[in-house]
Image (cartoon, rainbow, N blue to C red; front, side):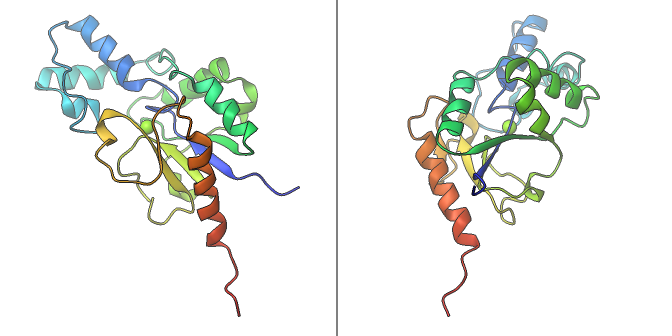
Length: 199
Ligand SMILES: [Mg+2]
């Protein structure tokens, strides 16, 4: 049997509601914090208006239990099953927050609880996504490091801070009816990388 095309899937902002979790904890700490800017920067702490709020956001994201407590993105499990049904092999590929010593462990524990042991066993919690060979990477980051040298094509998972990125590969949410067709185009592009030139 031919190997199924691998689709790597980012966690924060794609599988897990990182910003919503951080915003909720910030508002608990200080209900007056201005969270109205959702689009100017990928990093939530860079969208905050005061140095105090920035410090608070960084402290919360570095706390034990923060990553474990994040809500799953709406429709995640259904979207995951749709990828499998369409003939893809989804694998979690997530960079841990290096300043939070519990992050990597909590990401795996979160996956085990939300997605089950098979997804968790295959998950890659690593720093450099471009080092991993596959057909697609579903990620919310506007400029994913190494995207120019990676074999995968990034499918941009829409969030307010990446809507200005011009790309032909975009997934609006886990409910996006184009999920399968966008990934199919990624897989087509991937297979074309290895085609033998005609002699
Ligand atoms: Mg992300």
